[in-house]
Image (cartoon, rainbow, N blue to C red):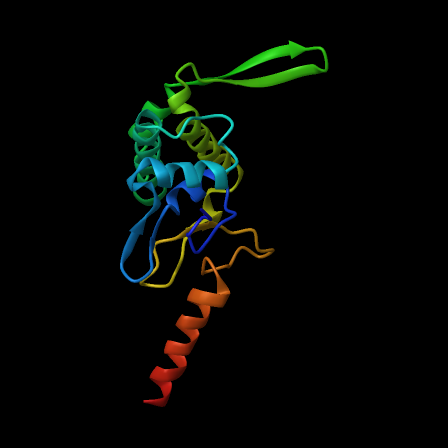
Length: 171
């Protein structure tokens, strides 16, 4: 089954947040293992984790933790997710390497999303945004040159906002 979400391609942490969206009412891809399987495939993680109840529970905990950091600047939950793994530094035949070490396989997708959020926060925290459309709950990482992007998609939310503004001026 193809991924039904309206916005794909964000960094892993924001892609996890975008498993909830509004389309004819609230939608949530992660209500069951079948939805988890779709997300794991879409995120390129299907070969690293099983779509089962334990992984679903861990991914939901990670989604809540990422949301709490992005929306409320609360980091306790993210720290709990990160406790499930680490980056192990090692020297390999091809040189120094950072190896993800997450003992419980069910925590790999959630841990990777939490680690990705740390990377985004280190790189440019002000570029992590929620769509400015009042009826949209999607998130994006602003990669625009001047850092002023407002909508997850100009084609959908941007156009709706501009059309509503235009209509309001005419009435």
